Image 1: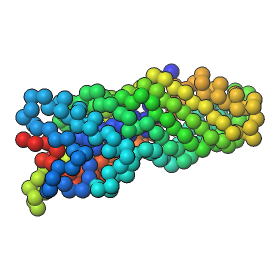
Image 2: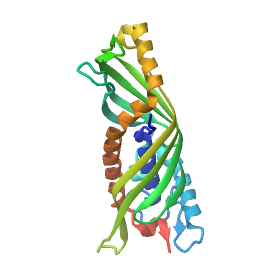
Image 3: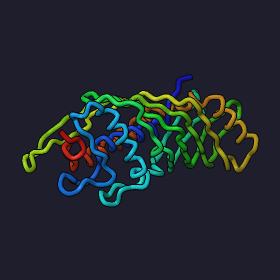
Image 4: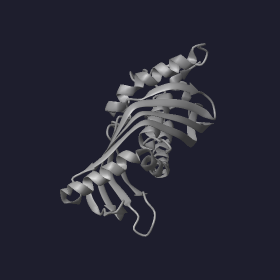
Length: 257
């Protein structure tokens, strides 16, 4: 079995870290420094600890949202759906998760960062909680397993190693430098996996218990199946969000000489 995180929340965590590093928002190059920005200096011999402190300082603002820069709260984060084929064969067990809500992403800790391009970050979160509408079809073990209900998952002790490429450009109108995240790559691991379903198969106890037994015994493998879709969805969403914000925030705002 391989481990992964609900790339959802780790990718999200990474995106939060990126937001922190670049101080998302409207162009704040003029006027007083907002309370959510902890500035650092390029000449500071302790630049890395300062940036880590700045990321930690930003966390509650990301959790609750920043109305002044039209940044909504990140809790909970919503995704549309995931489609999973969990067993093979013509009657394989397939699952569709819709209206996914993820909580816990804002409780991130950036343990280490390496600046530059490529940049690198190690991000941890105590737990990511996922709730969704569940539907399934096919045969599970030897039982017909078509039904609808609710899905709940807890991914504990999540870790992400994130690498990406960043480019810079200057604007003629203000001669300031702006960043753009071009690519993201995430290697994920989750130590503790717990998934369960409820209110399915017209509350058929045998089918519900069989499904939950399958999820308990194959949790890491189910996450492995989820990973490609999660990474694609989240990388697309978060690169778009981060780069939209970076359009308005010059490097000179958050990183002093």
